[in-house]
Image 1 (cartoon, rainbow over the protein chains, first blue to last red):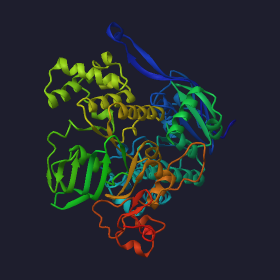
Image 2: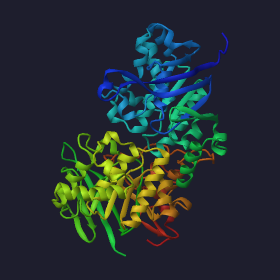
Image 3: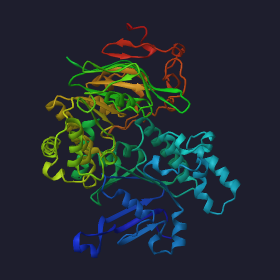
Amino acid sequence: MPNNNVIVSLRDVVAGYLTTGKGWRSLFKHVNVVLKNVNLRICDGERVTIIGESGSGKTTLLKVILGLLKPVRGEVKVLDKEIYKLPWGERVSVLRQVGYVPQDPYKALNPKLRVKTIISEPLEHMSIKPREIEERVYEVIKMVQLSNKVLDKYPNELSGGMMQRVLIARSIIHDPEILILDEPTSALDVSIQAQIIELINSIHKRLELAILAVTHDLGVAQYLSDRAIILYKGSIVEEGYIDEVITRPRHEYTNLLIASYQVFK
Amino acid sequence: MVLAVRARNLRVGYVDEDENILWAVKGVSFEVNQGEVFCLVGESGCGKSTIGNTIIGILPPYAVTDGELHVFGKPVVRGNHRDYSGIRGRIVSYVPQNPGTSLNPYQTIGTQLYYVLNSVYGWDKKKSLEVAKKYLSLVELDPEETVDRYPHELSGGMQQRAAIAIALSTGAKIVVADEPTSALDAHLRLQLIKLLMKLKESESLTLVMITHDLVAAGKICDSVAVVYAGEILEKCSGSNVIVEPLHPYTQMLADAVPLLGFKRRLKSIPGEPPRPDEEVTGCVFAPRCHLAFEKCVEPPPHFKVYKGEVACWRYAGNAKQ
């Protein structure tokens, strides 16, 4: 296969949501375009962050990659397969190579399940022996630096930082090729944020997977990525190595982001 | 200089199902001058929001208080007796953390302002809306348009500004802002802080800010109190807290903030703060402190050092108590 090491590639992707207009226009549905001609390529073992304000289409972009939102136009390749052209069963088997950490750890965990069940859930549909699942659970819980006692607790007994660790454990238990994180630190304290950044980087080193993180915090992006992509109003306005983006911004929106950061800090 | 808020040995706790009292705030003393920006900094679960709620007077009925709290000289908390009449709403007011969930989705911004003004001053709709428009333009929203909007029609930054307008509309002199910027984007955050600073000057407000970002607090605040496990570990002026942090916890908080264009190793603080039901003897921070020594098993008193006040045994030698 050519380009064996490209994990995700998007070409001229246009995506949006179906809406109706007001009045007589409500008879017709039209697409409210959120992403406009996005081109993106993520290689094996790379750390990429997407930076943008709320409403810029960050989460929509993730939905397209995760196979949850079919784009209007364009080509979405995950692990060299065009996921939206595959039948459902095959699409699922491709997307099993993707790990996903959702945005708000306080809302993302099922309050009725114990942590052990939450973490092992992704493996339960993969016809793996129960004993192997159990071994794997202990392995990942060690990897995210939690004690085994946590496994028997319910999510409401955990702190925010611990919940985020549980979510990361769940997303790496099936040994994915790429880990996608939606705002991994925005709901956490500054001190816990540093712990989670460290954890994500140690997992990246250990499992050698690609990491795609979404954030609105340039300071966090600096520690989480090699490459940065700035998304503004649905299109990519700047792309490059993170240090270069910060020291020599080319787009005015990047300038604005950096300026607002510097007055603060 | 008029004292806006004065707390002396204030303790706030919550009663659980078994009638045990869990003290979330364990004896704090602080003073806030009028026209000052005062910051409470700390991790979540440290009791900083409880201190904020005590100042505004929105503690739940199962809360227990001890010590004293005065607002503009009037005792609002004395022992377990709380009396906020004439203070809550009129003098002290509140900007919530997440405006998206705290504004009523069924009512327009104008109606929400009317209900606030009607319940506090008993004004009719016409007069309320007049005042409402004045305050909406004060927070740089278009008054004519915003009055008839529902919260979901506004962006996050506009919602937060509408919430500030509601907080100010009663003519409050003290505004307690509970993490006002944490739900906003980086550049909106800057706008909001600038707006709050402008309002502080023009309306001579006293701001009590609750935040977990020490560096941002240091930039905008006149004085900072670092809260940990229900106790104040350090009190000092805003600029000093970044330049020369006294307590090891403050130092670690400052080191954990990522700075732009200046890459250093992020130091994370190991472990997590103690839960309110945990018994801690001695210094509350000692289990997580890398500088702890034998003396730390005893609770440290507050030492006056240079321009601040710190509760750490390392300053026992070179300071008077």
